[in-house]
Amino acid sequence: MILIDETLFAKTKAIINKYEFTFKKNLGQNFLIDSHVLNKIIMAAEISENDVVIEIGPGIGTLTSAIAQKAFKVIAVEIDKTLIPILNDTLSRFDNIDIINEDILKIDIKEIADRYSNKILKIVANLPYYITTPVIMEILEKKFPVESITVMVQKEVAYRMGAKPSTKDYGALSLSVQYFCETYIAANVPQNCFIPRPNVDSAVIKLTVLEKPRVHTKDVKLMFDIIKSAFSQRRKTLLNCIFNTGGFGFSKEEIVEILKSSGFDEKVRGETLELSDFARLANTVFDKLKISVDNKF
Ligand code: SAM
Image (tube, rainbow, N blue to C red):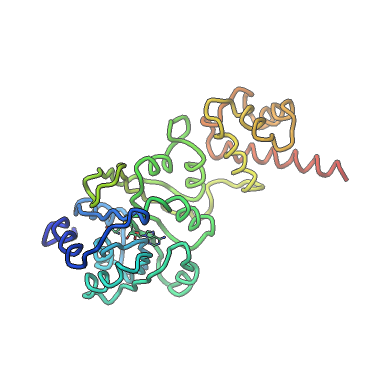
């Protein structure tokens, strides 16, 4: 347990008043003021003294100091330059925190990974919600050697990331994240755990990166193009979704044929398919496309 001597709310208020800090809505600045939630993030992240943790958006350093008590090193990346003097103050007792005033999307994570190649790299953050998906997908798609990503995000997004087939939250985001990770929702977090209060509820999700992607397919981009197409119109069949989004150049009859030879009924809906089903379908489309290209020459 991390011991907090004053309530986080009073402490946060005092720092904000001292520095006359004004919140910037466009940077997603909602600071955590609940120590139970803070502990849940730390517990879910399973930080040890062999870990280098990149924290995205430290704010006034609440989560940062809790991470620093457990990690070998924290690299705290904060875009808002007005928070840097505050962080230098609130984190002054630590000698294992690097504060970087930069946009996380411009940070060379590979360089950090190379610098600490004998350590385990983890990402922990109360994410600014406007960059949740780009940040997570960038880290996963570029295959940085990150062991896990433990983040507070908008509740709806967390549930979409972790959703299983045939549920209302299941979609392209679920499949993209689960292609790379195991997902675990560690906490649901109500709006009153932050100042200022956001308009939405939040959740803490842990993404544990798999050693290799969950499925093998001949053309990953093609598989995700099919997935995107499959969820383009939720109420329509997979056949109609694929056909209505261009059909990869095939006629409706040919798409029926592709579905059947992949083991699916022509009335199947995309939302019932697992990642392995999409991989199989993508391989059939890939082979068909290859045959039609070969036949042209
Ligand atoms: N970690 C703090 C906490 O839990 O109280 C603050 C979290 S607040 C939701 C998000 C933080 O991310 C803010 O401090 C904001 O300035 C910062 N931020 C927003 N966009 C960023 C970006 N592109 N790169 C780095 N930090 C960013």
